[in-house]
Length: 213
Image (cartoon, rainbow, N blue to C red):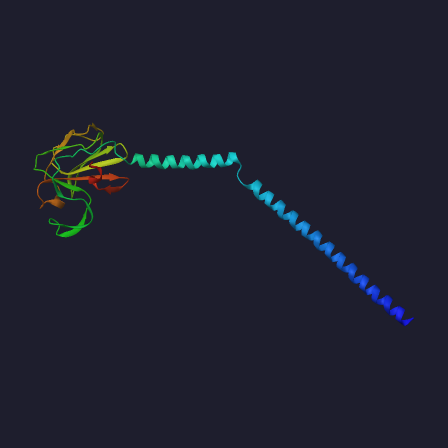
């Protein structure tokens, strides 16, 4: 009887173990199926959150529009044509943002323009079509004319004679005489006779030679 009782006990234990094992597997399989389903649903949500074809086209159009705007802005900084020399082509002193020696001031400083060699009384001409934005006498640079051109470019003529042919608001043509070379620039008084010529765009000086083709 004891042997039979022991055998029954062992059988019961084995049966319980097998039952627990089967239940554990079933639970694990169910959890795996749930996780798999959640993963699929997450992927679906991600796919739905991506831009549709129409959204993609809209984004591409916006990018294209911004690119065109950038190109337009760059184009607006470009003058309409080749620069005409204001009074001959002989360069007395070149443009330099690095410090160069000034005989008049006895120091080193940037020279943000070109000095074109020209005798006093030589006619000075506008480099492009434009509108006179300023005429004045500067304490250092003497009689000065500023002309605004297409592309938001400003040409500046310094060291002029006091007799100026144009006034603020006048429209001028490329090659039109606007003044004469003088010796009014105190900052370059010891240099040879010349016109000091500058080009500016958006508050920054530009080497005039960039516009000589």
